[in-house]
Image (cartoon, rainbow, N blue to C red; front, side, top):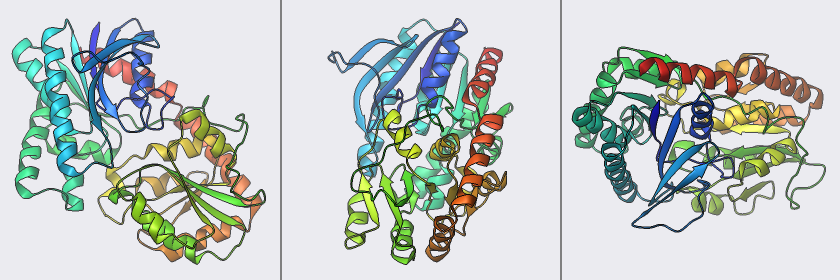
Length: 396
């Protein structure tokens, strides 16, 4: 089968962002399918292509599939208008590819929601069936955060309606996202969550930590975006409240809020920042950490409508996790248990949870073993990829 895989934010493991589409494209190719993955240039991503762009595009073989990269930069540091422009430019270029190439099925992975536009156009003009994957529910999340306007939310609602109703199948990363798909009219919805890369992350990885971290420090690491949705000011406040002098917090990543966070954290000797790291380097840093940090802004919708990839990396690395998220994340941490969940927006509770783990290495070790066990038993990405491929094949 010839599959056009549309994911604007694609990255190989050489980048510093999520690699789900890389793993799924590779799994599809391993089953004999001819996969073309079309992407843009996402901040922190590495597409695996190094040649020059010609007419705003370059392409080549990455692993066992073809990648087409459009010269359309996009990232969390851009403003809303600039990112919206990048989304629409990508949709236009991807539509041209979908209409000119020979494909049997389109696989459209959001966010952004605009990735559904070329899939819908190819269905209408070429009767090309498509599968729609929801990684973040739009417009539900932007509306919950107050980002955008009623007119924009209305337009996104109509696009989500069309994508969910006309897709052969919808893949959602959580039950909460699946509910939004059904509300938009989807008939066949499958929940396939983020998985763990048990080869890249784990206790077998040699540890590393930056030289500015004291060798006897208990290191709590956050690896992810620094945007409004992440609410990282809560970690800054928690760092100011912790009592254990051995406890250090390390925030790795990039985003629109990073500079403001660095200003807020001025004078805190136990809070540090790093630029995004390639996944193999991040795996070594997590192996050299004692705690994984999961943080989101205190928005009620985040409880069931998010599926942070970083949480899977922490579990695979065998780290106990401290999270400020209720709902799905809290339920994952109860399994084992493998971490501590604190109330959203409560920096004092975050600090108390960190202090408790810093003071109890035996408890950290037990939680970490439970985290790795859960990763192996429930979230092995290879098993999830098999289910993903079977669903795509059935939809065709």
